[in-house]
Length: 319
Length: 234
Image 1: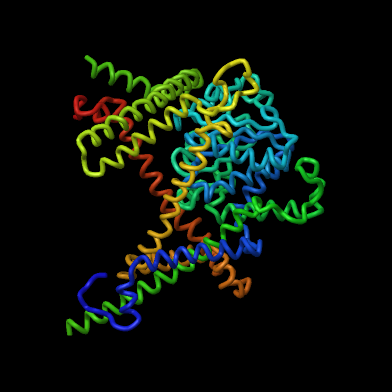
Image 2: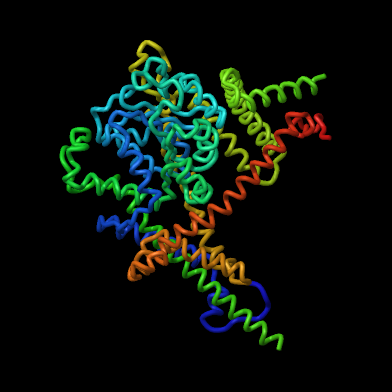
């Protein structure tokens, strides 16, 4: 705290507050909602924004059997925000009967893809075949240069799958010469290289022929808004965006009127009355976010109360 | 002579990359240059590993302050490298049953996958999660309404912080339809889509102009700082 003048009373206690109390308050603000939501299995209602609705529409409007390129450019550090986006994008594509080609420009992205495949495709869509309906091409070094190569020759940039199979023989990539042959590029991005570079090097170069949607961290969201809705058709910003997208998919799946559109593709048939926790994960994470944001607002207000009290005390001392 | 060769390679490669989007005949040459870059990028991983070993070995051998951390870094590096390259505990790949070591290094059940799941993932997640505590502490101690600009920043922060949660919806849900633009979630979106977009676009355009100028200086050989101390800079 600046200044020599001392503040008395409650504000004085706040002025001298050990920051470990702040840490404890943050731990409680985050842990409380996690425990409550875990025990009650309830989530907070979401009001999807236009940007999230646009992501849902982009996947929803593709003809069945379209091939979607999913770029998982993140690692475990940002999985808290981005993993639910990846899970829901894969789930949405599988429910709509789209083919999924997974790639990553981050060294640990290949494992994030594996986790998503295990969690969504192998668990709930066991009829989908590796290499036919989905494939993990893993990590490729080279950042923007990989993007440059896929513009003209996709298989040249990714000659093998993560498990070592030649991409030239893969049924899922028959008919894919360049990245423009994909129906949609869905980028899940934690930073560089990520969504921004996909826009600058691929979407712009494709002359608007390749539609793109993006899911990104909260830090990256402000940097991507200038590209929405022009180059990026839909945008999921942080866990809030993931929760909105998840709620849109859940609402669609839970509506019996839509069951005919996706039944037969999932492990269960008909509209499920109870959604598994993995498909509520993004919405459940909004609870800790609410607690943390409210605490931040309270801390900023308290900090400013102390600041103005200090200024008043300093003026008194000066007078 | 070596400097001229390096300059020529940089200029030719740069010009090819620059012109390939405009001339279809140069498209494949541009892709080939990108592929060469990818090989160099892969080699950079080896250089990076070499640099890591060199720096940390010298810190340990000189017993610099914090040499213990350097030792742990080296130990983790060597253990991970041996486990990854040796494919320890990797199950055989059913697609290439006759080929030894054909399994993926990070296949389920392998030691590498174990390190990823039980060491790397918790460590990186913990590092990221710690940010919340530091941000909270900083919010309490440093985020002060000292002047008009700081007040604007504070007001914007409140709107975005509340508008990105259910609290924003709950607090302003009672507003009539004609004032729906004042609901916190809508105000938050307005700030992101209008003020933020305008500012960010200005920054993006500024950066693009700067990158263009710097690229031209490198292509024309005016800026040679990328060659290091021996390259010199005019």
